[in-house]
Image (cartoon, rainbow, N blue to C red; front, side, top):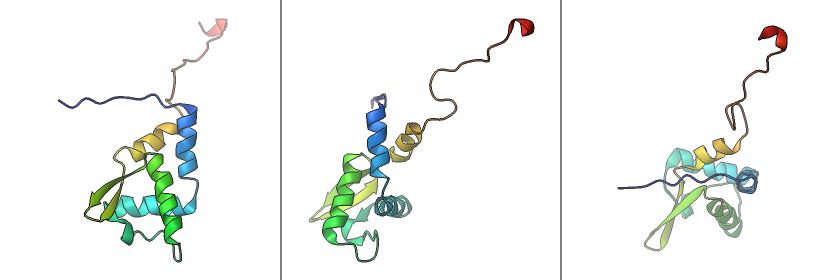
Length: 111
């Protein structure tokens, strides 16, 4: 039986996620992985003229944020969008329905 663990997100964890996606190159990498599925690092085209060491850096940031995963295939490394990446990003965005639900406050005249 597979158990799932629900982790409470903290403001620091949310900030780390937003920091990871706050770069155009990393957004392009995430989009490419979302569209193509597992992709060899040699086929990731983040932007024209991106030096290999910069691509490695951006992938490292995304990996540390838990937004991408890796799988070794011989001497190659395939990158994939983490299964829960979009859910985690969505959960980090504050909005309606997040937190305790508070009903309307009625004045004495409306009770």
